[in-house]
Length: 311
Image (cartoon, rainbow, N blue to C red; front, top):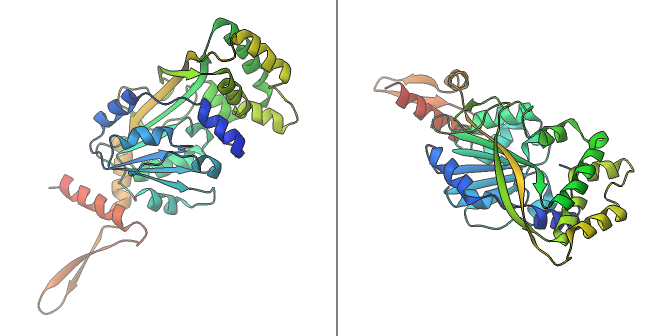
């Protein structure tokens, strides 16, 4: 996501909806444990707050410092700035280590990621037994027939300025790779469709438009799509400027888990770290596990998991 100015970050926070609590209820009910959740691309913490109701600890990360400054504080949430140059191993350690996360959530965010490195990290940190990953995006909003007609023209005008990742969002993740096994809540190419109710004022709506990524990308190329004339059209269609409307965003979600093949690959990877060395002397023998310091906690957890599976 492009970095937002302080003013636009405020507009982003005010216009974006709160995710329905029943989403988090359903996701938490499907995870094996409730120790740790990771909200990746947290923005200002909208999803992290929902996760904190069900998980003992939430790690929330984002590349955008302006957003994190406005993140909603909570005793069970730790926010972290994660610059692009952060290595895979450091990200894994920051989140909690290999085989540590019960639920990964990427809300309105995953299409901005470099997908392959992200999925590699997700498969490492996700708990191999009972862990889930959920991604969702909202790509349209329904306000009123008059406002929606103008919005459609604006959406169509963004086409020349959209990046491939933006098109993933506009397509509702139907064309996005998602290399995880379905649990019946959407799958690669077939996300489930959901509605997000929200209340929005005209001022909030205009803030949404001005912080909207396609419009910002067009502006970077010298084209202003959200013109004063367009705003006047929206104002006329809105009606009373002080009217706060009940609207809803159209959302698309996919939830998955590690496949048996993924788990087997990770088992083989970790077996090389769970090397047993017998130290013998004249009186006894000891067994130690040879692991790297950075991955100790995750490797230890996975070794314990493997031992349980083999007994």
